[in-house]
Image (cartoon, rainbow, N blue to C red; front, side, top):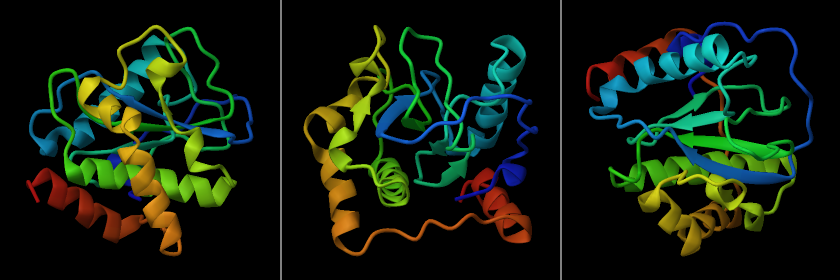
Amino acid sequence: MVCRDAWGARPALSGGVRQTITRMTVHHSAAVLGDNRNIIDHLRQHQHYHQDDQGWIDIAYHVGVDRNGNIFELRAPELVGDTATDYDPTGHFLVLCEGDFDQETVTEAQLDGAATAFAWAAQTFHVAADTLAGHRDFAATACPGESLYAHVMSGDLRRRIDDLLATGGVNLQRICGDEAAAVVARIEAGG
C-alpha cells in the first residue's frame, strides 16, 4: 500500500470520529480516470475537493485502488469516512476504486487490488467478507457504477476476498520513502 506522503497527500485536518470497523463498502469516484498515469492527480483532486469544498477532515475513503491494482493509503481506518449521500458510514471500511464504472469497465487488476484491500481489512479488523456491499446498498446513488457493482452482486468480489483469506490472508505492507516514490514514478511513467 503506497503511503499518503508518496502520492502527495496533505495532512488530515483536526477532528474526526473514531470508529470500529464492522463492514466493508466499495465506492467509485464517478470520474473517468482515463490513463492510469492520472491516478496521483486524481487522488490529490479528491482530497482537495473533500477538505476544501466539503469541509471534511480528509479524503473520504480509507483505501484507493487504481486500474492496475495499485493500492493507496487514504484516510486512517480508525476514523469514520465521509459521504455526500444520505447514509451513515460509521463502521464502514471504505475502498475507492478509481474510475466511473457506469462509463468504464473495471479491470481484473483493479478487482484483485480491491479484493486484497478488503481481505486485509477483514483479517485486520475481524470483519466477515459477507459484510461487503456497494455504496448504493445504503444510499440513493449509482455508486459504485454498473460495471463494478455487477462484481458485488454476482459474489465475484467476495469470492476473491474469501480466496485470499483461505490461502493464509494478505500481508499488505505500507511502503513509504524512496520505495514508494519509485512506485509513484513508475505509475506516472505508465508502468
